[in-house]
Length: 215
Image (cartoon, rainbow, N blue to C red; front, side, top):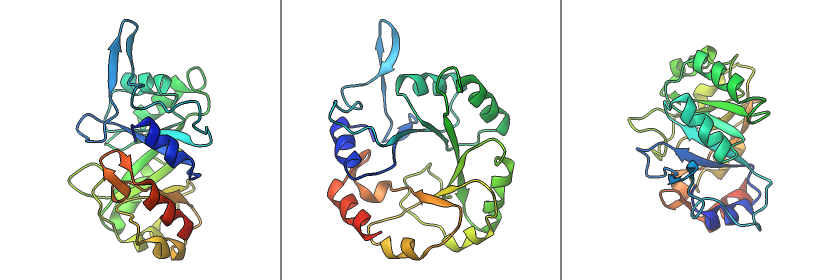
């Protein structure tokens, strides 16, 4: 998300996290603007006004981004969570955490997205379990996120890791009953993206509200 008023409206629904995508190739990209002090957030679109509740956490989504650029956005946007959606190596993730926590952002969480095509895809989590806080299981596709397509959730029966995960990938307004029926001891929530948008980066607040009441 990148519009301050839209963030304010969605936050009133009691969501736990609000995501901001920092990837130039994405139509949902949150931009930065130059200033005499360096590069700062485009607050005209992103930062909601003082009426916005602070009950949600800010998630920054990055795709194979340089560590310094991630750190800059963590500081400037006061991110609570870093979600890595590319081919980041565990060594980079460990170095990133040690640089940020505790000096720049104490308690920063790092999530790793795993692209799921079949049961074999699930096993990739083992490479990252000792360096991240949670996984995001998303649909494998040629694009990076926002595909609107789902994977077969039953393959997550093979996930026996210790870290919690978010279920992602094409979840839409008609999936409330399926989500209620889906059970996994490590599922911490769901990621709602393109199928709840009026345009890239803008959530349909009424559609979200109706959906959340059905869960």
